[in-house]
Length: 259
Image (tube, rainbow, N blue to C red):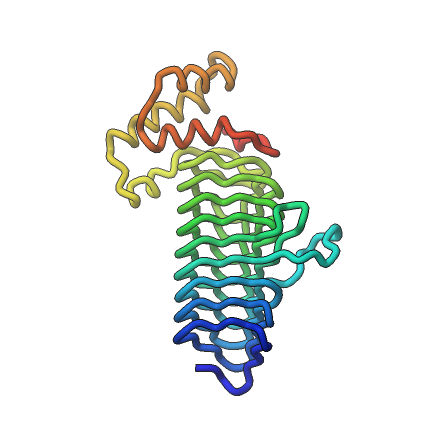
């Protein structure tokens, strides 16, 4: 169902059972999956691909040009996956040539009121952004992370799987998987135990991760690098510990959020 006041430009590809409410605009390069729902006053501009059953609330704006003075009109895009909820006043900008050319939001994500996803960001699956949380360019958010309200994340930062950022935090470093951070310049505050239990991680694995986490980040002996190397040498096989170690070993533009 498409409301008579909506504007859909010639060339846009609209799937089956899509609802487009009053005063929406869908540009010529848009590709809309089946069952998606645009309530009213939604703008889909530029090269935007949207999966199935994704819902857009009033005054969300997807695919507009990035807030980057280096952008010079190059052809880039936005991809948003399946079953996402994009609430009021959310903005998602297209990518830039210098950052890979695509901004990506995965499946089953919730972007609450006023969330901003800047150019060239990569957001995984089942990520929750609380009200007015903000990503600068080139940020990577891994699966199942929770971004607190009114928080801001520095460009090129990484937020690891299953981590949680407290509200009103300024994140200038990488957030390691399964952790919590908070503060004006966010500091590591511990493991996201609630998140681990919600995803039904076994108690034994949580305890193992807790010991490794405490040793790497809170032990005063040896250097940080040395502690990581000692943990690697133990050859842990649990998913959460291996994920943490791989994250620490990856090259990054930023330092880590530490206690």
